Image (cartoon, rainbow, N blue to C red; front, side):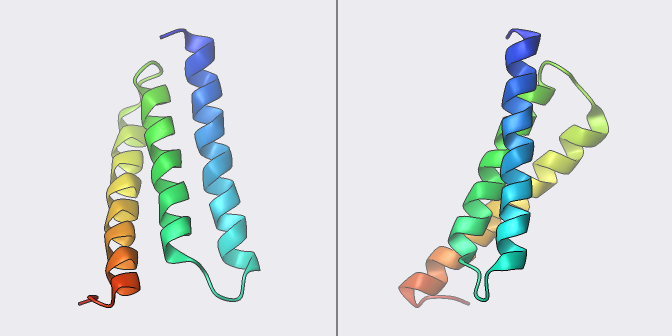
Length: 85
């Protein structure tokens, strides 16, 4: 992948993270599915960028962030279906 494209993808991921954080701090009631979905997409985009501009610490962080967001999506979907544990 072109390094410039990797940077653009990474910046989009970062903007998504910031947008989700702003959203979470501005609304009275957070939509957990939306919040976690945006965070998951942001993490995936940053991991794509990191495949070109590798940084182990950032890969560990983004992988953890993606897994946490994925768990949040599962929980939010269960809550919407009324099967939350």
